[in-house]
Length: 156
Image (cartoon, rainbow, N blue to C red; front, side, top):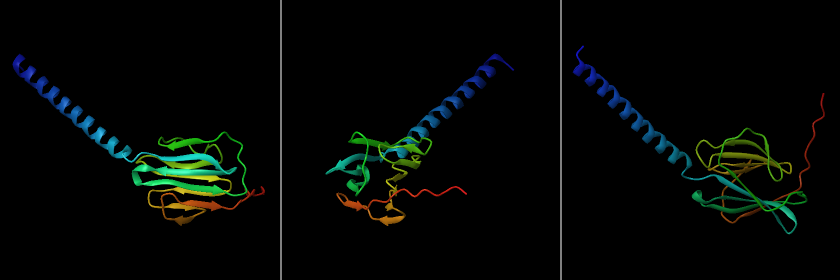
């Protein structure tokens, strides 16, 4: 193998490497943009007239100011606090009141399922589910939930 053919081979290898690297960076950035373009669910934990409530927002999907009020419940936390479900993390994890039992933040807004004062709240782009009953998204809606004590199942 001559020196010129050896250099030509290395130039080709370098060009293929650079083209592959540029293609990878372009595809990775496109996928990341698609993954994050809608932004995360935002859940603000607050009180309305001394009663714990959450306010759900997802501005990209035009789901704004959906308030869920938990009648008969009391919260021992400093309000308001906002949690954005934008990063995957091991579930369950604590929230200002209640806990998040599932998150899927691969393609935002994704899915978030929380247990709050004995109620299961699931945020999906398609629908809001409360205690496994679907509720259509309506901006500015207030949903009042009765107090539901946590059920403790005795060990056998």
